[in-house]
Each structure stands twice: as C-alpha cells, then as structure tokens.
Amino acid sequence: FDVKNTGSRAGTEIAEVYASLPATSEENYKRLVAFDRVELAPGESKTVTLNIDPKYVSVFDEKKDGWHLLPGDYKVLVGPSSAETPLTGGFHVQ
Image 1 (cartoon, rainbow, N blue to C red):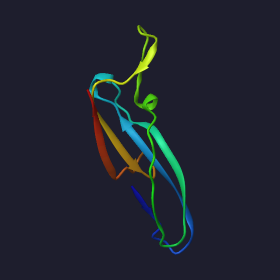
Image 2: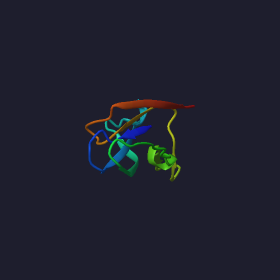
Image 3: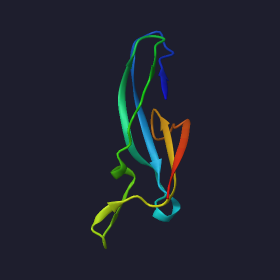
C-alpha cells in the first residue's frame, strides 16, 4: 500500500495492519498483525510492504498443544489506527 504526506511539513506515519479471523474463531475483534513507522518529506509518497507472521493470525489448540490457522476467510485492514482502516482486503485458508 502507499502512504503519502499531503502536508507542507515533514512527518511520520505509523502504518498499521489488522486482521479479523474467520467466524469459527469466535473472535469479534481485529488483531494488530503488522506495523511500521514511515518518515515522509512534504508531498512525498512511499510504498509500504509489511509481512504478516502466520502466528499472529493463528489460534492456540490446547488439545494439540500448538498454533494453527483456521480454515476460512480472513479480513485484512490497513490504516493509521484501529479506528481508521480505509484499505481492506483478505485471504482464504483451506
């Protein structure tokens, strides 16, 4: 995704990536799964690429004593804060 400083002064943006797990997880919240501090000059744009560690979107299975990804649809949200996530996407795990 791209981040742009639309102001007239240099600044820093914290780009945040959140994920919501499939409905079978019974979680009704989004998890912070990646972030980066991006410094920008006035009017500058930068492309930001963040990797999501699979463990951050996994659940712990007590019976198997380990982490695993649930099958289903995951939603990915990107923005400057948890309250403002204008970019959305997703992925599917079989």
